[in-house]
Length: 410
Ligand code: ZN
Ligand code: ZN
Image 1 (cartoon, rainbow, N blue to C red):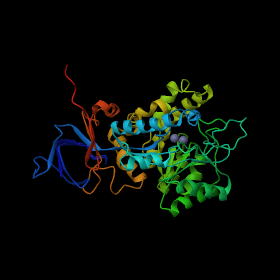
Image 2 (image 1 turned 135 degrees about the horizontal axis):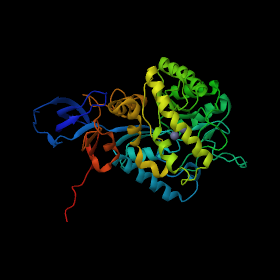
Image 3 (image 1 turned 60 degrees about the horizontal axis):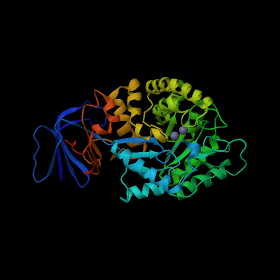
Image 4 (image 1 turned 180 degrees about the horizontal axis):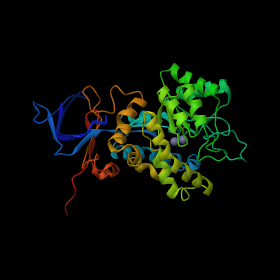
């Protein structure tokens, strides 16, 4: 049994922080919460000394396996690639993330290595290869390339390219067979791809519906990359759980999402970061121009979605050198939603998106004790969550797995 005392509690539900809180943890779960003096019994006591305790962060749209800009993923040394992904996974945990919904390219083997305790890292929920139509957002071939799209080299997935209802059924079954926790589809063009535009729709409604059916048959959900209103409507009608990015969303598509209970997962951080150094990372000028356009509209679409009553999750979508910048998303979303709502999106709402609303993402009795102990007050200054040195400790299922070392004195 563990007892945390003298904590300022942000419970992840949007409630105001509660000072001088305590919480009791047994068998990996939070069993009771209160304020003031706590009965210590034989518990191991952790004195938080006024620090903030909040649920471990959840990133609903990350690419842990995107150790580089996508075009360069399948080249280079495979052992070094694997080592980099494992290093990113432990770094992500040290940055306060205890759950990641991986939106593509990362193989389920990485998730198993973490889940089995071989490597430190967050609970990793992978999509394996994103499903894409020929010439779609994750068909990474250039126009001159006549080779079939590479799918999986044993370590990193590219897109699984499929066309027509029969082929997409096969593709969904294939990524699920290989251990995907959810299925990722590309329902519109994107910024980082070569042969398409963000205004394109990709896959037909029939294809998307077949993919949702295949995932549903195994109790899994589908997340859809989609920018424009037509693509969003296609994916929502097909029954996907979340729209990723959604930067060109309008009032009509927002109303449709609200009516169907479809979540929006904005990913503003990656646009902000690529706008600054996308060129250096290998993107063309046209791609970076595209990024700048959708960065500006990201804030507008988030406001429209919020006003329409769409439930807002949180994703970073960071690639390569931006992997340590996941928590920037909370700061950027907070500009529109406010701080406590941005934290709620990255904890309890994201838990609902990954199908764990009943036991993850909030500090509540019966919930898994995935917790952060943070120096400073994220409700006042959300940027503290971007500083790993402000993360005093990370608990996974009640066990301290990251603890800041006392500063050396010399
Ligand atoms: Zn995307
Ligand atoms: Zn992505």
